[in-house]
Image (cartoon, rainbow, N blue to C red):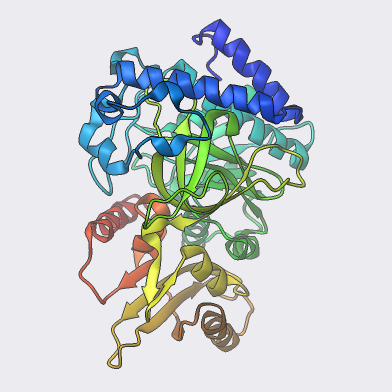
Length: 471
């Protein structure tokens, strides 16, 4: 989007390709030419300018590598980025347009500067997604947006703030967990400004609802919110239906990305995520063996970035478990479909069975309405079978029979996940549940008492303290 600082030759080439991509007119020879030309450019760029990649790719005949022979290249891991830090970069930080960092909740913060080319090629996909989402819902007018995510050292505020301005949409940056804002002020501004669209993490949908009840608001009467655009963690259909039961608002994914890999995929009106394909060569690999399944399938997502910016990554293991398909979406937008099913490290083993976060959440919330939060507690059992307790916090007076909710939830977990669980209601969930994916879904939602807390759990607990202080 910040195209005034982008080399005009690259900008024009990219926009011609992007226009054809959006129109759906590209054929395989055109894709092959784009992929191989951009891949060659990135490989030469990193080998010449990144101290890390100069060592990492040493001895390889990169001139012979194409989009069909990526497996000749080594993976880049998160540990590589944490260890090498600025040596991964292809230019000094002083040449960046903006500097960001990862949060550092699960390891050392890694530098994520972006130059104009990075910002332009990444954010244009976010802008197009928002344009289509708003046009489908609001026609010719633009809604009032509440942007609820971190801004300092983080791309969220800049990306969505600039998108809003480009689209002519009024917006206010009111992240409740900022010490300058807090939940009380965020809710007051949502009410006074008649915010219609809230952009933030899925966990925030529930955290806002709980805070609103605490401060005496009626969710349906006192707010105009009718759409949550979520990012940053899994959001199952069951979770979206639960949010609708609280707010009377729809929930759609708008962005899947990271500080390191930028805007990987953006949302559509059908609630699906489309890979920003001109910017990446995707692979799906078996997370245990590292064997590549190619560009589609289910497993860990690996990305090779095709934009030769300040920090392009080659065969980067994202750590995210996804399903990637070439299925055509009814919304009409192009791009492979990405279903994020949770981080690989967030898979949970219960009584010997490995479960994905998406499976647990979908089963748990399938028919639950008015849920303000949940947590799964796992204790070791005397006979080797784990003891599982699910704690639900429900909106007071939500209308459903509590006994039926508890019984039906336990039945679904048993039938779908082979998990025998005791389900109970609570009005005092551990505040860590509201940290969502700030650290990890698992750290927020799973209290595993079979082992001592690891560094992610401790980081989530510290984040929960800050959450309370900013309420």
